[in-house]
Length: 412
Image (cartoon, rainbow, N blue to C red):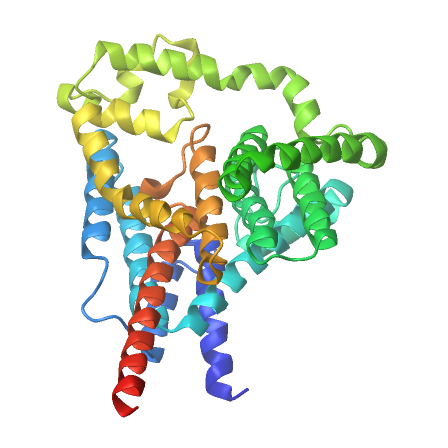
């Protein structure tokens, strides 16, 4: 490998690392790292898409951020930081990745490689917290707030990582038609990561995404796979997890802890709906902030949100703006998903489908947390643009193949 390729790969890996783990400005580097690394990658453009393909998506996301962050919450710093991350990610896919299939595949491999690293660190954090927590701080260049977790400041942030990773790995083993032993091994890895990952919402999101995938992929035969998966989960828990791993640090004991009742998502969503009922057109139209309308509510003390990204967006912007923006932002994703599942077993869709269901899992996880696409959450943002870019690359390859066939027929 030439020196230039090593440099390009190094900068690309560094950018994807900062994007995946939401590293913006750290204690040492007081500059927006995604922007700097992204600009460096523009020096190595190979097969860009011309003109820029993501004007509409980028503009819609920025408008949604402006209304939510600045108009709704007065968070100027968060808004400008999120804009930098979103614009840089769009530029990365449009220009650096472009129509180059190799760069696209490498980007996906790097992102899920660093996520797998985060999973390993999470497992080790259960065993050697005194060693791993300082290592986490050094790798993130920030002070970690919750443990055990992987390469994330909090367990809530790590939930997005484990939801994306497990859904991707599970679906990948089916779409690439790997051996049944590898499928079982991958499923066991997913269960262990979810069990130790301290995120009940990630487990629910993974379950929802993979069940939908199995029923789309196998139709009624999926009942057998779901039943087998349930039996495997029971066996893994009974004969391995229960006796060999720390019973104090898993999603089951977390659910039984006293603190679990303090963050009951159903109760918080119900109270949020009561707030919305008082301000049906959205808080921004009444000139109200979240703290002003929840100060009497014990569930939302100290500015605590309802931990539902979509419901909070709906509460701030009201039904018309929120649903309109969400429909416009997700329109192409939904359309591509419908087209892809019509040809779900075709080889060109083998990588696109794991990306789709990873995005579905991480989007479901946002029903219980604050981070999502509009807040420029790293894994969510990567998956969003990766799905759009994959479709464009495939379309370009089909066009080139059609042209080649025409040339060959004319020569014949």
